[in-house]
Each structure stands twice: as structure tokens, then as C-alpha cells.
Amino acid sequence: MPCFPGNRRRRRSEEVMMFEDSFTRRIFISKVLMIVAINLLITVALMTFCIFHLGTRRFLLKHWYLPLIAAGVLMIFSFMICCCANCFRRSPQKWILLVIYVLCHALLVSCLAVRFHPKLVFIAASACALIVVLLGLFARFAPCDFTGCWILALVFGLVVMVMGIVAIFIPSFKIVYVSFGVLLFCFYIVIDLQMLIGGKTHRNQFDESDYILAAMFIYSDIIFLFIYLLELIGLIDS
Image 1: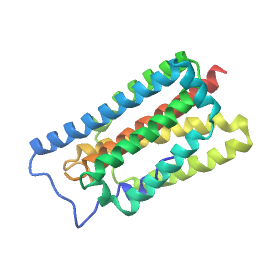
Image 2: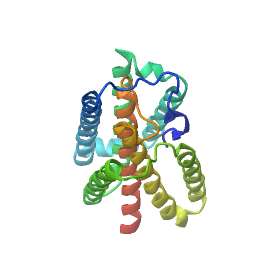
Image 3: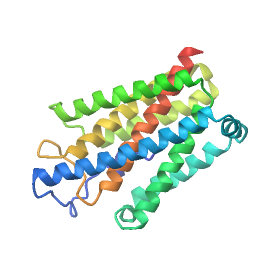
Image 4: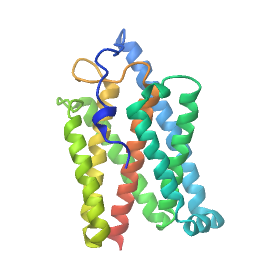
């Protein structure tokens, strides 16, 4: 699981850099979405190679501990984002950290994808893309503001974590757990997209120096939404 949104989504009340005009905001949004798109293309390319290259597929299936290592590194990133977010605002370390972040996600999602039939992976990816587009439209045009709901998001994340622990001991409970996981990351995506859009209608927003952090949050939300969708589709198929 990525870090809970409580600290990471709280606006820095004394340091917020307000955008000068709507044009600057549009440039910021375009930059963030471009970085997210590149990250997703790299992840999809690596995942596709792992799925269809027999040697790599066998290697990932044999070395089952690799996703645990990737998850551990991502957990370290979560603490870094909460405790020393300035590391992700300075060059060149922010780009180095972003590359490591993307590669860890790519390894994690590839290790999971090779355990499923390619048809199921394609269905999950298509469903994820459709859901993200719909959530993007909702975040843009919905009259309600979710950027101040970080406490609710934190509680929701803790509930899903507890459900995951329960699912380890009660396998039949897993489908409920992954279903709530899908809802959780849909909620996260809406919050992060509204923080990206910003404006007077949203209580909190990313500032101009946070384009790497914004891209990391949205990219991670999409990846974990795909992971939960793939798990859900795999459970339904089985």
C-alpha cells in the first residue's frame, strides 16, 4: 500500500505558492499529466515484456520475493514523502527518485501480472483506463470538493489495510478486500486530480514546485487501482 493521504495531501499553509493565472495552472497540469503518461508507458512496456517473454516470466515466478523488495522500497518512499518532501522538489535528485519510484512500481505490477492469463491483464488494463477517464471527468466537473477529505481517506485506507490482514487468514474474504481496494484508489484518484486542477472551488491544491510529487501520487494511484482490479478480475474468473 502507498502512504496514507493524511500528511501527503495536506496543504502547506505557510508555503503555498499560488499560481499567477490560469495559463500557468494549465502549463502545470500539462507537465504533470505528461510525466504520468510517460511513467505509465514505461510501466506498460516493461509489464508487457515480462508477460510475453518466457524467460523473464519464469524468472519472476521463481523469485517470488521480488515484489516484497519493491513494496519495501515504496514504503521508504512513502516515509520520505511525508517527512522530507523537499527531496522531491530539488534537481537532480527528484528525477533520480522518480525513476526509482517508477521502476519499483513496474517491478511490482509485472510480478503480479505474470501470474494471470494475458487476457485478464488486458481486461484489467482496459477497465482501469476507462475508470480513470471517468474519474477525471468527475473530478473536473463535479460541484463537490474532495480535497479536504484527507481524514476520511486516511480512515478508509486503514480499514482496507485491516481488511487485507483479515483476508490473509480468511481467503474467502479476499474478494471483499480487493473490492474495497478498488473503491479506495478511485477515491484517491479523485482527490489527487482535484488537487491538480486546483482553483477557487477546491480547498487544497498542489503548488507550482510540486509537479513531481503530483505526478508520483497520480501515477501510484493508477497503478494500485490496476493491481486491485486485476486481483478482482482474477478472483471472479476463478
